[in-house]
Image (cartoon, rainbow, N blue to C red; front, side, top):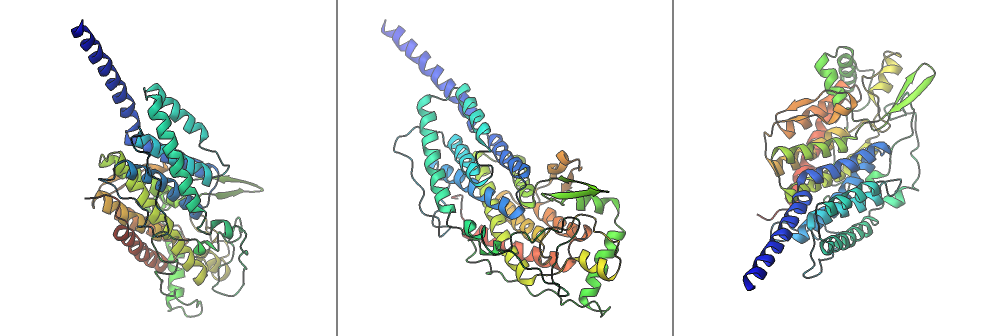
Amino acid sequence: MKRLLTLLTFVALFAISCKKADYQKFTHNPELYRTTVKKLNDIVLENNFPPVIASRNYAYANIAAYEVIAAGDPKHYRSLAGQIKHLPAVPRPVKDAEIDFPFASMLSFCQVGNAVTFPEGSMEIYVEELKQKVKDAGMPSSVFEASVTYADSVAKHILKWSKGDNYAQTRSASKYTVTRKDGRWIPTPPMYAQALEPHWGEIRPMVLDSSSQIPAPEPPAYNMTDKKGTFYKAVIEVKNMVDSLNEDQRHMADFWDDNAFKLNVIGHASFATKKFSPGGHWMNIAGAGAQIKKADFGTTVAAYTQTSIALYDAFINCWYVKYRANSVRPETVITKLIDPDWRPYIQTPPFPEYISGHAVISAAAAEVLTHNFGDNVAYTDSSESEFGIAPRKFTSFRQAANEAALSRVYGGIHYRNACVIGSQTGRVIGQMVNEKLQLKIK
């Protein structure tokens, strides 16, 4: 009888362990985190978030997820509290609580993503599907409830912290005043949209001490009378490039266009098309890097988080420089003084030219991804396939960043200097993020 009870106990424990292994195979799969980030990326796209605001969405959601992972594995991951000097200590898990930390990290990501996107609650259907799947995979109710509770506490903490970043105050800040002085930015066709987020340089950064910490040199002075001058030559270079693009250059410009809202005008009809923002594109690249390197769940979350912080700070710095320099776009100069019928290959976005945002954020992201996954990581980027744009192959993250910067010249929306300086600035920001934020404990 005693032997029979022992055997029955063993069978029961074996069944429980198998059940546990089943649900952990699901919740601990890094592919599930990549899917979760992509879900937020899709919502950002669908709701037409500008690139700077999108970067805020990614940063806070990923930080919430990462803090859960760090709490669950403090031997391998270090909390960002204190490393980001204004982030207060995150709530610790209740002692002996049965928490599935990867599952809790995704719930925390979604809860923050729900709150910082609009319409608020956009991720609720995905969350309910996720919860049902873990139940179907056999997660015990005690683990489920403890995970939900901890995820909620971390998400609330991160959301409370986020409210101090000056975002709400910039919603009611004064609008940009357009001046017609030569060399100054003015709205461009076909939307003639008002200046996008002129106060984004006032947002609180995470690693930078201030938006102005990394200054950029003044752009070349506007001068279209001196045909041997730096500015005139820059304008002519853009015009000549766009007028003679080859197939690969057009593909490059299309691939890195990343226009979150393009207005298409055909005769008297107009319609909008949407793509991932530049930051969203680099979130996809972060996922590709993690997948290629076969990163585990925690490493994947850490890479996304560090990349999203670099993007966030890079946009803040870049926008500070843009509205300080307030430089005119090539389209404005060329159509006014050279060829009134000329148009750039891609649509000019509604904010000043110098420095190139795509150059800054791409270089920053590339430095962080190189730090996380190594240099010379070859990959194929198929992020744009869903928009009908063929994939491109890259030998490294840095090569991709360099191409992203150059694509803006081919697209006809930036002078080369803005892309060169933008890349230099972005690299500095990425290196600062790598130095100041030590996520993994070696």
